[in-house]
Image 1 (cartoon, helix red, strand yellow):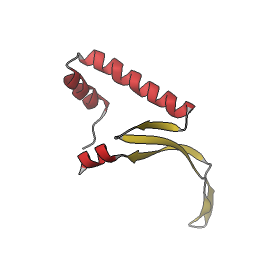
Image 2 (cartoon, helix red, strand yellow):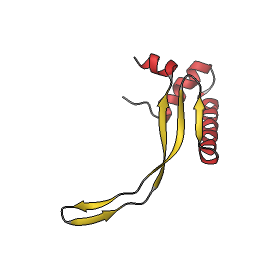
Image 3 (cartoon, helix red, strand yellow):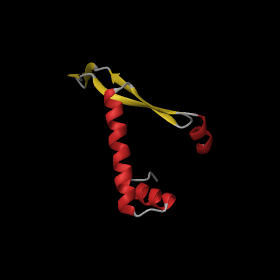
Image 4 (cartoon, one colour):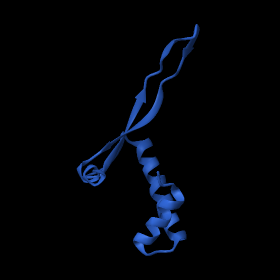
Length: 90
């Protein structure tokens, strides 16, 4: 099962031995900074763990069941994992 924000904050608070309110402030500040850096730069890399790279998914056109469709280009992030995290996932 995937961990959500609440579960992550609880685990972070336990790991750092800090109150949940302080943990939530720190996690939210980290996420805001991560978002800002991804917007301002081409992405973010955490050596040994993972990188997030800004990419553009090209729009598509086609026909499904006789109906034509078209989608616009869309900004997205590509996740790449590095050795430390990859080893831990094995």
